[in-house]
Image (cartoon, rainbow, N blue to C red; front, side, top):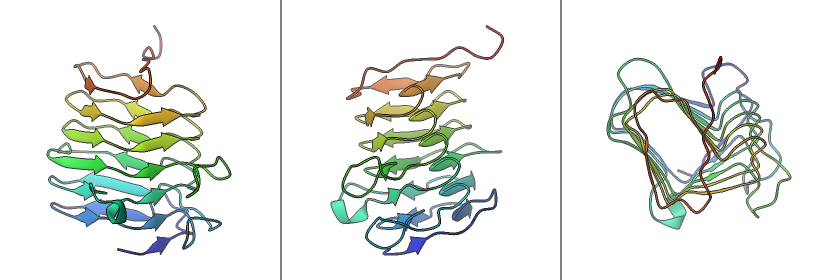
Length: 178
């Protein structure tokens, strides 16, 4: 809690998680303290493996500001899915005041694996999709999406993604070659 994590330009992210039941709350990831400036990271948070992880939570002091990263704000990738992983109530892209002065270079959130709940986040001004879904069985609920460079949501999943009560009209994209 209360960390400012910047300057990790490698592919592993400012925060790299390979394990279960980790909690990331109340941080500035990709920007300096107070949510401005900073050196960014390659990926803000890379969750490589694990279940029961939590990025953000319902209380305002538990929300993370994840912005200013050259790649994705958050990426869930690899092997065993993201069962019981929650991404909740974060500011992903934009600055602390809600302006487009700083953003992530690619998607706000990229879901390469199933099993995550993405809810109550403000996802804005990212250089790619707001939420980029490459695997099914993820739940998206009550996220506010605005000003992302491509679409709010891109769903390339073969199996369905449950999308509930979005505060933005969700859109989908087609897999390459279609």
